[in-house]
Amino acid sequence: MKIEEKLIWLQPLLLKQFKKTVQQKQLAHAYLFEGVSGTGKKEMSLWLAASLLCKEGSENLPCENCQNCRRVFDHQHPDVIEIVPDGLSIKVEQVRNLKAEFSKSGVESQQKIFIVEDVEKMTPGAANSLLKFLEEPEGSAVAFLLTTAKNRILPTILSRCQLVHFQSLTKKKLMTELEAKGLSINQASLLVQLTNSVEEALELNEDEWFQEAKTIIWKWFTLITNKDNQSFVYVQTTIMPHFKDRDAHRRLVDLILLAYRDILMLHYGTVDVLAYARYQKELDHIKTQYSSKAIVQAIEAVLLSRKKLESNVNAQGVFEQLVLQLMK
Image (cartoon, rainbow, N blue to C red; front, side):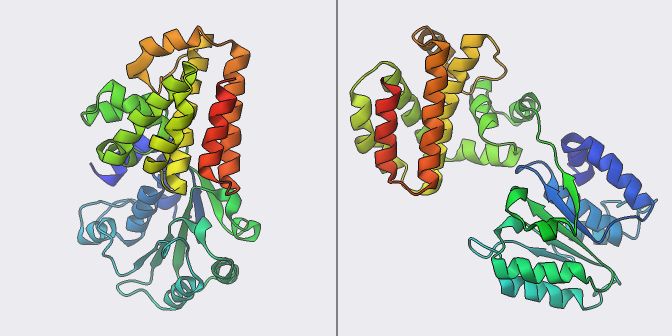
């Protein structure tokens, strides 16, 4: 699939707007693309980079077939510089190198394009260094800053970029795409609740750890909803050995939260896409044991456990306390 075809599927309105901007040669010098993962931010930045470097397209639009376009899409064009976090952050040295590149002429043209992924992960020093550059841009260059967390970016940086929001895909649209990729409805139904990215969903589906995690959480959920005291012991014997780090703890909260969300949706008859569609018969039975107030309280307890984890409270203690609250 060509990038333009993918963007037509992901962001048809944005693509239409950017085509007009490109045709009129009105691209700004700095953009901030914000939205959840998998919504086409990187694809759009590459497509726009190709539009600036393509020699064969018409109306300033990229042909996607020439050598320049192919090198841009293959991340091999010398005038397209891409920066990703070095470890957990984007460091000041990376931004200094970026500024140095900005001061140079393009290798093959007068144009330079810079794509910075996860820009919210910049260290304070890197953010301030980038800010100085954005205040005084040099040469013929365009910068695309990509983020999933706009609220973590300095307001002064935001004010110097043209902000573009990338809408999330609808769950049904994502479901259709995953089914086309060979996943069953039962597989896709949970994945679309956890990610808005087709690629990430496919990776999760192939992840053995995730597959086991789903089974563990569903058993834990059934123990809790059956008021089985083993659900407390289960935390130590099964939950903690499998969910070992902070990311895994977050995933656990997401998975258990989705189970209670399913009950709430079934209770009110407002089902869109059930996360645990394969267990709908069991969910229909479980919902009869809960009042609407009890379901909401359970969801609030799960959300509170997430806040505790973010505050670095001991995970095992958080999950054991959650069991006690959910079994009241």
